[in-house]
Length: 188
Image (cartoon, rainbow, N blue to C red; front, side):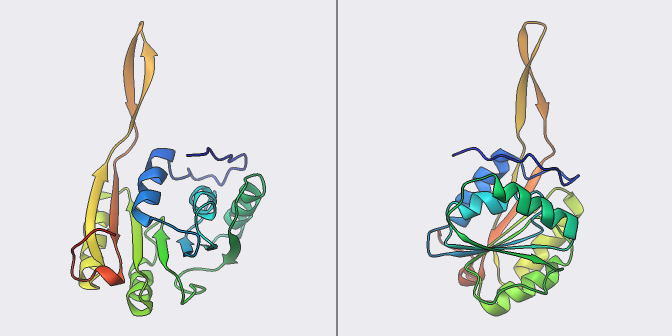
């Protein structure tokens, strides 16, 4: 995976590279896909998706964070047609999305309603808080969107007294599904 540059800070951490790798695998983006990100923040996921999908729409409710997304996009090579929208989801969500990523939990139920109603075939949501993960799992399931829930944690090694020790990142809960997978089975 080609690395990305994020020289502009949004005062919120980007989705970690290891999490992005799993996320992109679950989304399985192709050059004809229209990818939508809700909560673009630093633009890390937007940049990665714009290297795979044909079109990308990034929605961010905070104008200063959308400026950071735009600035970070400017220093990275991408091939997609990109539309940045300063609005709060579900407002501004395009009706022709093939894949949708929710990077945060604000208004997620309304976004999931939109995904179910418009037939988004790949939906992924990352959650770091256990209680929200449980509520979001129920919301995915109630809308017929849930395929799987993945929980993982990444640790990075560092030298300590001539040996290797590890610092752990917070666990991430990744909810994966889509409108075409309402039967709950099958690979994408």
